[in-house]
Image (cartoon, rainbow, N blue to C red; front, side, top):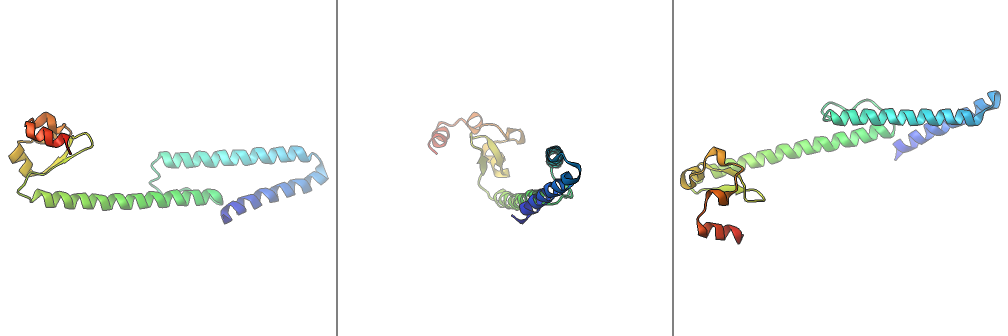
Length: 155
């Protein structure tokens, strides 16, 4: 919240300075209009800068900024960093799962939401006759045993 206050204070001070300047040169409304246009242009520039940073994947550190925009960049950067950490952790868990199931003598087949083959171990290659190219195929198209199809439909 302090960052928002900082930007609000900056805008207020600029308007006060415009009011003081208008005492000497007049035309307060024109000065106020110029300040508002400047403020809008600055926000548009900063918004464009944010969009470009996000479009580049937000891989490098966030652009130097101040006030509320710095806080926005920081929070997005933290979320991205936490997401990357979770992704690495999930990758390690999946790799441990694959290693442990690869050692099993039983056939293990991991299916996706629509019964497509996501992964299988070496025993599944031998027992079920699956091939590497079968990944992504729906298992009912490959294993047509009626008992298996019934089991799959009742899961």
